[in-house]
Image (cartoon, rainbow, N blue to C red; front, side, top):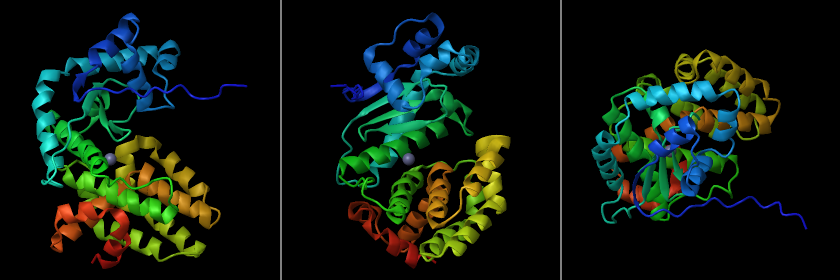
Length: 313
Ligand SMILES: [Zn+2]
C-alpha cells in the first residue's frame, strides 16, 4: 500500500517568545541545518513556499540581500516590550478571562506574509515583511501582536468560526467578523486606512448590495465592475501589490463568467486582496457605536453578522 500521507510537522512549543532569526540566518548564510522545530515552523508558515528550494535555485542572492537588509535594523531586545503591549490590546476583548500564554515566534522568511496565527495556538511573525511595512517599529510590532493575539484569544474562547462548513455567504460573514475584530483591536492607524476611511460608505455599501444580489449574475458583475473602477480600490491595490496590481485585477475580472465565478471573485476581493479586514472593522465600530459591549459581541460569536450588516447605517 502506498503511503501518501503528508508528514506531520506539528510542533508543540511551550508558551514564550522565541527568536529564531539567528538560526535561520546561519542556515541561509552558512548552510547549517535548521533544528527540526524551526524547520517545521518555517514550512508551516507557508506550505506552498519552500525556502531551501528557493535558496538552492535562482533565489539565493536575493534572499541573502534581503536578510542583510533585515538584520541591519533587527534587534530582538528592542521588540520585546512591544510584544507585551500588543497582548494587552487583545486582552481587552474580554477582560473576564485571561489570555492563556502561547508561543510567539519571530522568524525571517523571504515569503511575503507578515504573520500567522498558526493552528490557533501560536503566533509566527516574519521580521522581514514587518520591516517593509509603514510605521515605526513599535507601531508595527504592537499592531501585529494585537492582531494575531486576538485570533488566538478568540480560539481559546471557543469562538473561531467553523471555516469548513460554510457556503460563500457564510465564509464572507465569518471573515468580516474574525478579521474585522483583529483589525479593530490594532491601536495604531496604518497607512492604507485613510483610503478606506474616506470611502467607507462605498465599501460597506458594496457588501450590503452583494448580500441582496442572490441569483442575479448581472448585478454581481456590476458590483465587481464598480469595485474595480473605484479610485480607493486602485490606490490600495497599487500600494499593496505595486505596478503588477493590474494583473491581479485582470485575473479577477477575466474569470467572471457566471454567478459561481462572480462569487469566487468577490471572495478574492474580501479575503486575498484584503478588503474584508477594513470592511469588517467598520462593522465592529458600528456595533460598538450603537452601544453593544465588545465582550458580549465576542462571546456571541459570528452568527449575528448578517444582522449587523442589515442594521449598519
Ligand atoms: Zn488576521
